[in-house]
Amino acid sequence: SIVGGLVGANYATNAATEETSYAYATISNSYASGNVTTTGTSSRLGGLVGENHSTPAMPNGYSYCTITDSYATGNVTTGAGTATYYAYAGGLVGNNYSELSGGLASYCYVINGYATGNVSSTGDYSRVGWLAGANILSGSLSSIANSYAVNSVTNGGITGASIGAFVGYNFFGTYANN
Image 1 (cartoon, helix red, strand yellow):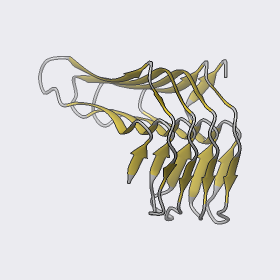
Image 2 (tube, rainbow, N blue to C red; image 1 turned 90 degrees about the vertical axis):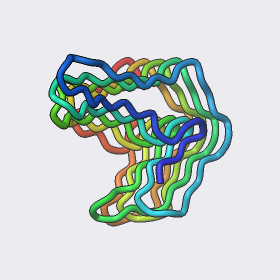
Image 3 (tube, one colour; image 1 turned 180 degrees about the vertical axis):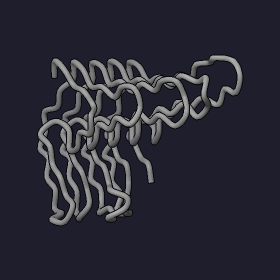
């Protein structure tokens, strides 16, 4: 499941076939204050957004997903993942994921965001972080900038579990001025 305090998925995909085209998914000046919890496996949970995901599906496509000037104050708790599908939990966003599957460029940004709720996992194969559970780049750019988190983070898992003071798992993503 993909669950967020404001929205489950902020997803930009581009299915252009012949002309160069652009797809945008934007969340700006927003906040969420409720707790986000699941006991299911392989979830993407965030205090504001469960997954911020960009993927241009066709050769002439560009896609951009952004979260700007937004925050979350609720607690985030996820269950376990599996060896194939990890669970991600973050105070602001569960998974910030830029994917390039045939398009020209894919960008995911989190800018000027913060989180104050506690983040935790109750099982194995989970990645949890104060601000983001994961920041994954398999596209053009996956970036977190000018953001912060003031909370506690715990991971009850042992096998395949990771925990980060800022990002639980960073795979070629960038972050600056945090």
